[in-house]
Length: 191
Image (tube, rainbow, N blue to C red; front, side, top):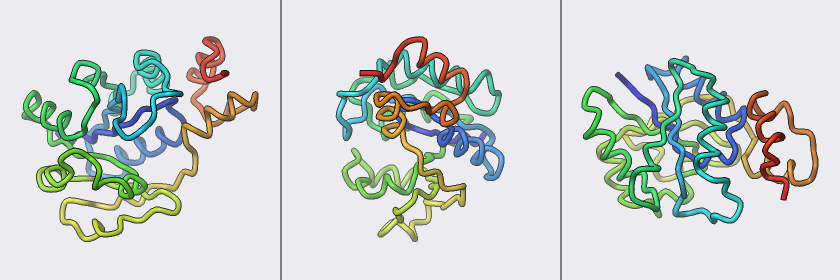
């Protein structure tokens, strides 16, 4: 079973994330995609980070029991901060029938050299990279374990969603309906 692991804070999940996951499962050789909700990215500030369980709930609402695209809270149970290599190693040991492939945007490669044991990720795992506006793979472009998947470019970010909500903008169509309704109901990101 080829399983794509789509890591992120998903703070909040939006239509760009869903379009990428959907594209990966329908237009690549992946059998499924797991959204790996990270409690805390070591390279990002925690200031505007919604509680991990609330972000997991938003991902669940967005995926609506999809059989090919699923959420996982595996990093909630691992030591913090979360490091991709540790999660990949743990999942590989616990799920020997899965061939795990890391899904990432090309924007990750500007700081990829800062990731814990990034050389091991490149050596032992395959990466399916989707394009992000204004970012290239740089020195990693010809790595044998990196495959560029020509998914549609989505210039939408969670920070844009958060700032729009804080500014009182109506961003209904940037989010799945159930996610939008739940964020409104819970007053997330308003302050």
